[in-house]
Length: 316
Image (cartoon, rainbow, N blue to C red; front, side, top):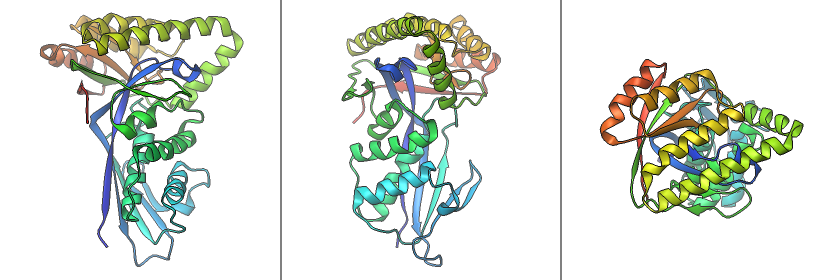
């Protein structure tokens, strides 16, 4: 029986992180320059129903049933079985590889889950809809992050720019004028769940102050959506700077992120901000294409461990 493979992109949040957990809008886009890839193949020498997982990046090499019952990969396999109506898997080997940095705000967990769901379903002779893949990836992301907003699995499963409000139908984002970003990684792993949990505790101690910040972030996200959909993309620069300042007030930035943001704008970026959970992970900078190289060099000089260039445009 042939092997079946599937891939899924990373993602970046342009505007609205943290506030999105509390019902405010956020804008996110796929990052196709980094990918998770999963290959599923038959393993006839293994006992019936055994799922063997291999991942060089996470040093995983063993049976699925050796993982905790609430592990994200368990959720993916169970979700695929329910979505396809298959009662039990044959013995299979699942090989996972990814170029998406972990704990960096690029949606690595949701991307692996989405790719695994599609590859496993294809192996079973089924095809999942984007909606089904998104739901399976969301259930896996709950294991990774505790109480995710749902934005990662949505933008990754559909691989299109979206505007997202928790609990409401998402909307695809029109991007009539493409724009360029440089993404820079601080080198600091920052699990989203831990930062989201800390923000929740701080908000519980002072709801009015934090809700004012969330409302201000929502206003920035709304202005950014209008700028994107009307092609006024240079306006995104000041909005990024404003969003970053608000995230600093939320206490989710850190000296390393602030240093990279300053380095990017000093080097000619139109604006910059942290992206994702914060306290490490990634930042993003809006750049004119002819300034991307200079901004990347400045970011590396300021401590970025690696950079990615991406262009945001409509897809499909």
